[in-house]
Length: 108
Length: 108
Length: 108
Image (cartoon, one colour):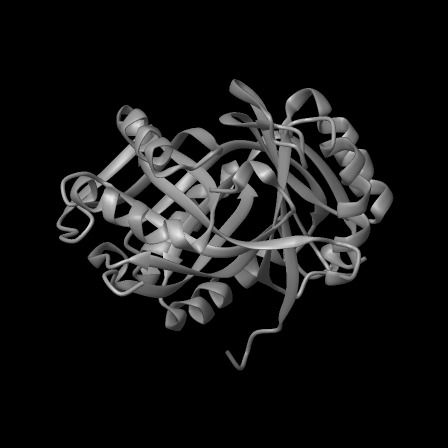
């Protein structure tokens, strides 16, 4: 794609209970993330706890998904920042490769 | 990312009419999927039928997207399970590569 | 996955202010995109302008995300079509690799 100036970034999709959204966005802000998009009022079924996965939950419109794109160097500190939280709360972070058109807004 | 324990999984994004959501989540449950997240009240434009794509629809807030992460071995049985359904109903399944932090909840 | 007939496509996730949704779907229609799904009432934080990224916004339930799957050949013309728009308005396009089961509806 010769005329495009695409940057390879990592997309993070952070799914957690809506009551903890501000914890998550504060963590992203402190990590230097410049922008994110929030999908509200998700429902879901899953397990409680990031590592243990024992207690099942079945939640109705209480989850949110925070979508953001970061440079690869930010993935590790962000995941480390979330680890203690997800040891105690429901949720997950999906990491995937994306490209975006040249964007100052996602520089870190 | 030396300190992280990331697992490679397949993300499935299943978009279909909300009235058929329980069919889809039942199929996922039977396939051994441990968790999923549902985005409600999507709108969309597309074609009717998974393989034929003839009849156009234009739907307002009646679609849902079910997001789940599964091991690669589950992709084929899940897609085969959905094939008869999508031969008759609108919708699509997107499959992509993701990584997640170590999670018992998505083991199958 | 021997029995599946998967096609490799590019997923576009176009996030922009809801008031400009029709501009975006018209552009996709003219580019030959056959279907898309719209997630409404997103909130977000980001920067104004595709290339400049200076003015921060903090928007509450005014963003939409348009999700579509296109052949690789359509990515460049679609991004070029959006460039003048994103030079003036908030938003972003994420591009990622996906597979879909054989679908006439996403042929272009």
